[in-house]
Amino acid sequence: MNKQIQNLSAVPFQDTVELRNEMIACGLHLRDKLGYFISSWGNISVRVEEGMLVTPSRITYHLIVPEDMVLLSWEGRRLSGNRVPTSECEMHRRLMLERPDVGVWIHHHGPWSSVLAGMGKALPVVADDMAELVGGEVRCAPHVVAGKHLELALAAQKAIGPDAWAVLLANHGVVCGGRNIDEALACCQIVEKSAMMFIFGSLLGGVRVIEEPLWREERERYLFRYGTLEDVKDVLQENTSKQPTLETRPTKTGKT
Ligand SMILES: [Zn+2]
Image (cartoon, rainbow, N blue to C red; front, side, top):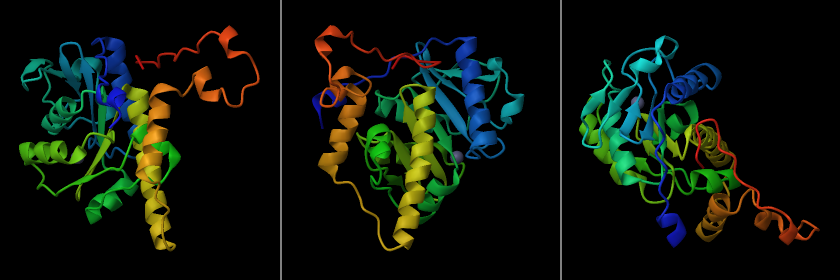
C-alpha cells in the first residue's frame, strides 16, 4: 500500500452540542430520507478527543437529544452519558482502533448491502466513486448470532482489512466510515449503489470489476489531489503557478 495512505490518521473532533446534533441529524437522514436505518436499528460513532462518542441503544432517532450520546474511553469504559450505548459499541470501538484513518463509523441494515450480507459475499470495486471514496473491495465478516457483541466486534475487526472504509457483516448489514460525518454518509450511499450495480450486473450477465492497480490510483487521487489545481493541470489552460492552492473547505463537522 502507498506509504502516504498507510500513515493517514483521522483528526479527532471536539465533543460539542453541535457535533452531537449533527449525529442526530445524520441518523434521521439515514432513517427518513435514505431508509437505511430502520426504527432504532442503526448506529453512529465519532472519534473525539476524549475517546469515542456513540449513539444510545434502543431509542428512535426523533427522540434522541444531544445528552443521550454516550462517551466511551478507548478501553471501553463509559465516561459520560446516562443512556446505554448502542449494543454494537464494541464493534465501533474495535473498528476505530483497527483503522486510525477513520473518524466516523455508521452501521446500518440498508437493502442492497443486506443482499450481499445475506449471501456472505464481498463487494468488489465496480465503480470509480467506490474506488475513490470507499477505497477498495468491501470484505464480508462471517455470521455472528445477534447478541454476541464481542464475537461480532472481533469478526468485523478481522474482516475489514487495511483499504476499504467499509465492511459487510454476514446476514446482518454493513459498517461504513469516513473522516467526518459527511464522508461516512457518502460512503454508505456509494456502498449501497455499488452493491446494487454488482447485484443487477451479475443478474444481467456479468459485472466489469475495476482492477486493483487502477482503483488504487483512483483512491490516491481522491485522498491527495482531488479539488486541487494539480488535479486539473492537464486540462486547465492557465498559468497555475499564479493561482492560490485550492483549500479543501471543512464540512459541517469537518477537518478533512
Ligand atoms: Zn446491526
